[in-house]
Image 1: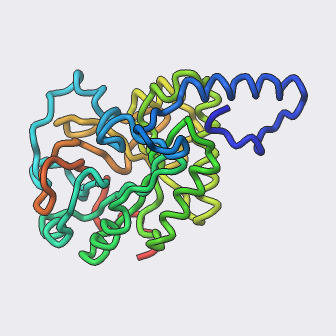
Image 2: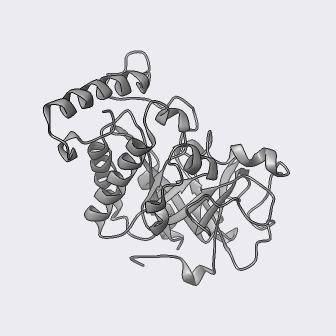
Length: 285
Protein backbone atom coordinates (compact mmCIF):
# COMPACT_ATOMS: atom_id res chain seq x y z
CA UNK A 1 0.00 0.00 0.00
CA UNK A 2 1.22 3.49 -0.83
CA UNK A 3 3.09 4.99 2.08
CA UNK A 4 3.98 1.70 3.76
CA UNK A 5 7.39 0.07 3.73
CA UNK A 6 6.44 -3.42 2.59
CA UNK A 7 9.47 -4.87 4.33
CA UNK A 8 7.78 -4.20 7.67
CA UNK A 9 4.65 -6.23 6.93
CA UNK A 10 4.00 -8.75 9.69
CA UNK A 11 1.63 -11.06 7.78
CA UNK A 12 3.47 -12.86 4.97
CA UNK A 13 0.81 -15.41 4.01
CA UNK A 14 -0.14 -15.66 0.32
CA UNK A 15 -3.66 -14.39 1.01
CA UNK A 16 -2.37 -11.42 2.94
CA UNK A 17 0.11 -10.62 0.18
CA UNK A 18 -2.67 -10.63 -2.40
CA UNK A 19 -4.79 -8.23 -0.37
CA UNK A 20 -1.75 -6.08 0.35
CA UNK A 21 -0.95 -5.76 -3.39
CA UNK A 22 -4.55 -4.86 -4.20
CA UNK A 23 -4.65 -2.20 -1.51
CA UNK A 24 -1.32 -0.84 -2.70
CA UNK A 25 -2.63 -0.34 -6.22
CA UNK A 26 -5.86 1.25 -4.99
CA UNK A 27 -4.08 3.64 -2.64
CA UNK A 28 -1.49 4.66 -5.22
CA UNK A 29 -4.22 5.50 -7.73
CA UNK A 30 -6.23 7.43 -5.19
CA UNK A 31 -3.33 9.46 -3.82
CA UNK A 32 -1.33 10.23 -6.93
CA UNK A 33 -0.12 13.83 -6.76
CA UNK A 34 -0.08 15.56 -10.17
CA UNK A 35 3.20 16.80 -11.56
CA UNK A 36 4.00 19.99 -13.41
CA UNK A 37 4.25 19.73 -17.20
CA UNK A 38 7.67 18.45 -18.14
CA UNK A 39 8.53 17.39 -14.59
CA UNK A 40 9.76 13.81 -14.10
CA UNK A 41 7.10 11.58 -12.55
CA UNK A 42 9.41 10.90 -9.60
CA UNK A 43 9.38 14.60 -8.57
CA UNK A 44 5.90 15.37 -7.29
CA UNK A 45 4.82 18.94 -6.71
CA UNK A 46 2.51 20.18 -3.95
CA UNK A 47 -1.11 20.59 -4.97
CA UNK A 48 -1.40 23.90 -3.06
CA UNK A 49 0.96 26.87 -3.29
CA UNK A 50 1.44 27.07 0.45
CA UNK A 51 1.57 23.38 1.21
CA UNK A 52 3.02 22.93 4.64
CA UNK A 53 0.85 24.41 7.42
CA UNK A 54 -1.31 26.85 5.49
CA UNK A 55 -4.10 25.06 3.68
CA UNK A 56 -5.70 22.47 5.95
CA UNK A 57 -4.87 22.34 9.63
CA UNK A 58 -6.34 24.90 11.98
CA UNK A 59 -9.07 26.24 9.74
CA UNK A 60 -11.74 23.71 10.73
CA UNK A 61 -12.03 25.27 14.19
CA UNK A 62 -12.74 28.79 12.95
CA UNK A 63 -16.50 28.36 13.06
CA UNK A 64 -16.30 27.66 16.79
CA UNK A 65 -14.38 30.85 17.55
CA UNK A 66 -14.13 34.47 16.54
CA UNK A 67 -12.16 34.68 13.27
CA UNK A 68 -8.62 35.84 14.06
CA UNK A 69 -7.40 39.34 13.18
CA UNK A 70 -3.94 40.01 11.76
CA UNK A 71 -1.99 39.77 15.02
CA UNK A 72 1.60 40.79 15.58
CA UNK A 73 3.99 38.58 17.48
CA UNK A 74 3.26 40.40 20.74
CA UNK A 75 -0.45 41.06 20.90
CA UNK A 76 -1.97 37.65 21.77
CA UNK A 77 -1.68 37.55 25.55
CA UNK A 78 -1.37 33.94 26.68
CA UNK A 79 -0.01 33.57 30.19
CA UNK A 80 3.40 31.94 30.67
CA UNK A 81 4.04 31.13 27.02
CA UNK A 82 6.85 31.82 24.56
CA UNK A 83 6.20 33.17 21.09
CA UNK A 84 7.52 31.66 17.88
CA UNK A 85 6.96 31.14 14.16
CA UNK A 86 7.11 28.41 11.53
CA UNK A 87 8.28 29.11 7.99
CA UNK A 88 9.01 27.56 4.62
CA UNK A 89 10.26 28.65 1.20
CA UNK A 90 6.86 30.29 0.64
CA UNK A 91 7.79 33.00 3.18
CA UNK A 92 10.53 34.22 0.83
CA UNK A 93 13.66 35.95 2.17
CA UNK A 94 13.67 36.40 5.95
CA UNK A 95 15.71 38.88 7.99
CA UNK A 96 16.35 36.70 11.02
CA UNK A 97 18.03 39.46 13.03
CA UNK A 98 14.85 41.53 12.81
CA UNK A 99 12.78 38.45 13.59
CA UNK A 100 14.76 37.86 16.78
CA UNK A 101 14.50 41.51 17.77
CA UNK A 102 10.72 41.36 17.32
CA UNK A 103 10.44 38.85 20.18
CA UNK A 104 10.47 35.48 18.42
CA UNK A 105 11.85 32.84 20.80
CA UNK A 106 11.80 29.75 18.54
CA UNK A 107 11.15 28.71 14.95
CA UNK A 108 10.15 25.57 13.09
CA UNK A 109 11.35 25.31 9.50
CA UNK A 110 10.06 23.05 6.75
CA UNK A 111 12.77 20.65 5.60
CA UNK A 112 11.06 18.13 3.34
CA UNK A 113 7.79 17.04 1.74
CA UNK A 114 7.19 13.42 0.82
CA UNK A 115 10.01 11.48 -0.83
CA UNK A 116 11.58 13.88 -3.32
CA UNK A 117 10.84 17.45 -2.23
CA UNK A 118 13.33 19.49 -0.21
CA UNK A 119 12.43 23.01 0.88
CA UNK A 120 14.65 25.35 -1.13
CA UNK A 121 15.04 27.77 1.80
CA UNK A 122 15.61 25.21 4.55
CA UNK A 123 19.38 25.53 4.95
CA UNK A 124 19.33 29.32 4.58
CA UNK A 125 16.52 29.71 7.10
CA UNK A 126 18.10 27.30 9.57
CA UNK A 127 21.47 29.02 9.47
CA UNK A 128 19.88 32.47 9.67
CA UNK A 129 17.82 31.54 12.72
CA UNK A 130 20.78 29.93 14.48
CA UNK A 131 23.01 32.94 13.80
CA UNK A 132 20.31 35.16 15.32
CA UNK A 133 20.24 32.97 18.43
CA UNK A 134 16.80 31.47 17.82
CA UNK A 135 16.28 27.78 18.73
CA UNK A 136 15.07 25.91 15.65
CA UNK A 137 13.43 22.64 14.69
CA UNK A 138 12.73 20.96 11.35
CA UNK A 139 9.43 19.55 10.14
CA UNK A 140 8.40 17.10 7.41
CA UNK A 141 5.14 17.33 5.46
CA UNK A 142 3.76 13.80 5.27
CA UNK A 143 2.50 12.27 2.03
CA UNK A 144 0.48 9.07 1.79
CA UNK A 145 1.51 8.67 -1.87
CA UNK A 146 5.13 7.99 -0.92
CA UNK A 147 6.70 5.04 0.88
CA UNK A 148 7.27 5.89 4.54
CA UNK A 149 10.90 4.73 4.61
CA UNK A 150 11.85 6.91 1.65
CA UNK A 151 10.23 9.89 3.40
CA UNK A 152 12.31 9.16 6.49
CA UNK A 153 15.43 8.96 4.32
CA UNK A 154 14.58 12.26 2.62
CA UNK A 155 14.11 14.05 5.94
CA UNK A 156 17.23 12.63 7.60
CA UNK A 157 19.44 13.38 4.59
CA UNK A 158 18.23 16.99 4.39
CA UNK A 159 18.44 17.78 8.09
CA UNK A 160 21.97 16.39 8.31
CA UNK A 161 23.03 19.34 6.14
CA UNK A 162 22.56 21.59 9.18
CA UNK A 163 23.18 19.03 11.93
CA UNK A 164 19.59 19.63 13.05
CA UNK A 165 19.33 19.06 16.76
CA UNK A 166 17.81 22.04 18.56
CA UNK A 167 14.07 21.38 18.88
CA UNK A 168 12.70 17.88 18.16
CA UNK A 169 11.83 16.90 14.61
CA UNK A 170 8.14 17.29 13.71
CA UNK A 171 5.85 15.20 11.52
CA UNK A 172 3.22 17.44 9.90
CA UNK A 173 -0.02 15.52 9.23
CA UNK A 174 -2.85 17.84 8.29
CA UNK A 175 -4.65 16.96 5.03
CA UNK A 176 -7.43 14.40 5.67
CA UNK A 177 -8.11 13.96 1.95
CA UNK A 178 -4.74 12.22 1.59
CA UNK A 179 -5.92 9.53 4.00
CA UNK A 180 -9.46 9.13 2.61
CA UNK A 181 -8.79 5.72 1.03
CA UNK A 182 -6.94 4.34 4.05
CA UNK A 183 -8.38 2.76 7.15
CA UNK A 184 -7.72 4.26 10.56
CA UNK A 185 -5.35 1.41 11.35
CA UNK A 186 -3.40 1.94 8.14
CA UNK A 187 -3.12 5.69 8.77
CA UNK A 188 -1.92 5.13 12.33
CA UNK A 189 0.62 2.54 11.17
CA UNK A 190 2.13 4.85 8.54
CA UNK A 191 2.52 7.72 10.97
CA UNK A 192 3.95 5.47 13.66
CA UNK A 193 6.50 4.09 11.20
CA UNK A 194 7.80 7.59 10.42
CA UNK A 195 8.01 8.51 14.10
CA UNK A 196 9.86 5.30 14.95
CA UNK A 197 12.26 5.63 12.01
CA UNK A 198 13.22 9.23 12.74
CA UNK A 199 13.64 8.55 16.45
CA UNK A 200 15.93 5.63 15.66
CA UNK A 201 17.97 7.78 13.27
CA UNK A 202 18.26 10.84 15.51
CA UNK A 203 18.02 9.44 19.03
CA UNK A 204 15.33 12.01 19.86
CA UNK A 205 11.59 11.42 20.04
CA UNK A 206 9.82 13.47 17.33
CA UNK A 207 6.71 15.61 17.78
CA UNK A 208 3.35 15.54 15.99
CA UNK A 209 1.62 18.49 14.32
CA UNK A 210 -2.13 18.17 13.72
CA UNK A 211 -5.56 19.61 14.51
CA UNK A 212 -8.23 18.19 16.77
CA UNK A 213 -10.43 17.18 13.84
CA UNK A 214 -7.56 15.36 12.10
CA UNK A 215 -6.87 13.31 15.20
CA UNK A 216 -10.54 12.37 15.51
CA UNK A 217 -11.48 11.81 11.86
CA UNK A 218 -8.29 10.25 10.49
CA UNK A 219 -6.61 8.63 13.48
CA UNK A 220 -9.60 7.82 15.67
CA UNK A 221 -7.87 9.69 18.52
CA UNK A 222 -5.33 6.84 18.65
CA UNK A 223 -4.13 6.61 22.27
CA UNK A 224 -0.61 5.48 21.27
CA UNK A 225 0.29 9.01 20.17
CA UNK A 226 -0.26 10.47 23.62
CA UNK A 227 3.41 9.90 24.47
CA UNK A 228 4.51 12.37 21.78
CA UNK A 229 4.68 16.12 22.28
CA UNK A 230 1.82 17.88 20.49
CA UNK A 231 1.98 20.90 18.22
CA UNK A 232 -1.70 21.69 17.72
CA UNK A 233 -3.14 23.80 14.90
CA UNK A 234 -6.12 25.94 15.89
CA UNK A 235 -6.61 29.38 14.33
CA UNK A 236 -8.53 31.27 16.99
CA UNK A 237 -8.46 34.33 19.23
CA UNK A 238 -9.50 32.21 22.21
CA UNK A 239 -7.10 32.03 25.14
CA UNK A 240 -6.40 28.33 24.52
CA UNK A 241 -6.58 26.01 21.50
CA UNK A 242 -8.89 23.04 21.08
CA UNK A 243 -6.73 20.12 22.23
CA UNK A 244 -7.22 16.87 20.29
CA UNK A 245 -7.66 13.57 22.05
CA UNK A 246 -5.81 11.56 23.30
CA UNK A 247 -3.86 14.58 24.59
CA UNK A 248 -5.11 16.64 27.51
CA UNK A 249 -2.75 19.58 26.98
CA UNK A 250 -0.64 21.16 24.25
CA UNK A 251 3.11 21.76 23.93
CA UNK A 252 3.12 24.07 20.92
CA UNK A 253 0.18 25.90 19.35
CA UNK A 254 -0.07 27.32 15.83
CA UNK A 255 -2.50 30.15 16.50
CA UNK A 256 -2.77 31.80 13.06
CA UNK A 257 -1.38 31.55 9.55
CA UNK A 258 -1.63 35.28 8.88
CA UNK A 259 0.44 36.99 11.56
CA UNK A 260 2.89 39.85 11.15
CA UNK A 261 6.52 39.73 12.22
CA UNK A 262 9.19 42.31 11.49
CA UNK A 263 11.70 40.81 9.08
CA UNK A 264 9.12 38.75 7.17
CA UNK A 265 7.09 40.20 4.32
CA UNK A 266 3.42 39.22 4.32
CA UNK A 267 1.58 36.91 6.67
CA UNK A 268 3.39 34.22 8.62
CA UNK A 269 2.40 31.34 10.92
CA UNK A 270 2.53 32.39 14.58
CA UNK A 271 3.05 29.83 17.33
CA UNK A 272 3.25 29.55 21.11
CA UNK A 273 5.20 27.24 23.37
CA UNK A 274 3.29 26.26 26.51
CA UNK A 275 5.89 27.47 28.97
CA UNK A 276 8.75 29.94 29.45
CA UNK A 277 11.57 30.03 26.94
CA UNK A 278 13.87 28.34 29.45
CA UNK A 279 11.67 25.23 29.23
CA UNK A 280 11.84 24.82 25.44
CA UNK A 281 12.68 21.17 24.63
CA UNK A 282 16.10 22.01 23.19
CA UNK A 283 18.06 18.79 22.68
CA UNK A 284 21.39 20.15 21.46
CA UNK A 285 21.93 23.82 22.42
